[in-house]
Image 1: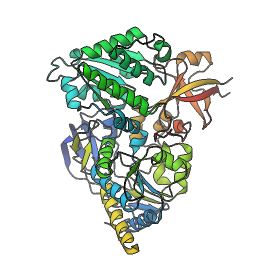
Image 2: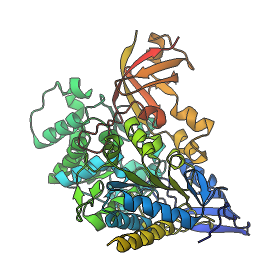
Image 3: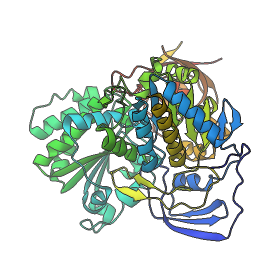
Image 4: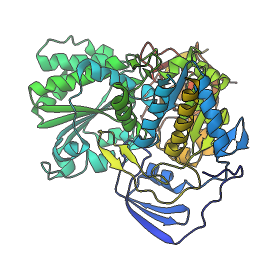
Length: 446
Length: 114
């Protein structure tokens, strides 16, 4: 790795090339049918990409920043690794956070470092579908892949999400529009329901729109479970949820008549009061419907490899997020070991943030504490979090510069085909160097 | 006279595209810093597009410009803002043992800034 302090030289522009079957890692759809036209160090066309994917590919250029900074001053890679390792090994309650916008290969090294230093490892899942992860443990997940949705799902419920804006290709590539093996007429063979508090752009794509009252998702799902089971439901459910009992009975009847149903649920459930209980109700509804037909449920995931983060942290610790390794074995306890809480309560005395920007979206007490402790930040951009870091590494971009593995929102692993080289190291290279130095320091102390 | 509303922070397409251009860009800052109010509430409160309103609760206090929500996207009593720095200032640190703060469905007071 370079020992220079100045920004690394950006490789000279080379000939035009086309990268086929590249993967977009902007959102959890992880569409792997991109055709990228690359001119030197710039992607000039992104065929098949949605509006978000185009913005992702076309706006990434090699930035002229130092490979690393220490307290805001340019530093060599080696100096930054040394300082990062010192911070992490001198802390008594360090926390590792982020990881949803990097490769599985980098994620597993981040978990290893957390284990070496007896720290806590948490991912952006905890402020995404972490509550759904808790619900999986409560009631299980009747699951499926998006391939099954495409080929089989004739009844699709989108609940608490707005795919038209957050996952623009979901309708056309995976769920509503495509012709499938058992749905030869595509959209005509499917019934789509949207359940949300807002009449979003996604409502235009639905056959049935249920505009529910805010914070009534649990009550709605529980009433639907009751209707499905033949329990008499009080018509006053309309006062609570905004949806009449007759409409609910009709939707449940249609769910029973479906050949293959799926509920695709978003953060309207997990970020709203009730959180894991909301997800649990929807997962239980899907489970119950299997008495009558085949019915599944999947969370709609936001970041490109947040699903990979869940998988990797689970392989390595047995739990998906919010894992403390301080006692030499993993302990899982959302609320106790999740980053938002650990920071807001002022507990962590050091942090390593990878590919995430909590300084721009955490609660104010959490931001205030993160600003006050030593931190190591890995990010391709000068994020608000990188700006307050003690040690900041400029990294290459996964999927655009860096190969590796990511998981689609349905837990299907997909390989990355990078478009052009970056002068900056990957998250994996930085983390491996930190891990090596951490092990040396700990060995010397023992 | 302040009125109580429920604030829904959420993702938008424009937020996603401008995010890639940079969080410091005017477009991103404009997107995450503009409150959407339903037309009915705009008229009732005497608000026009661009008017600044103060939003606050027991956690935070922000002042932002407002604009009418597209078509019939929002019912009366509900506000929308693109998820980001501004919305997070109204979000508390309490997660009720879930790890997740109340990030949607936040109770707020609203009043026009004269």
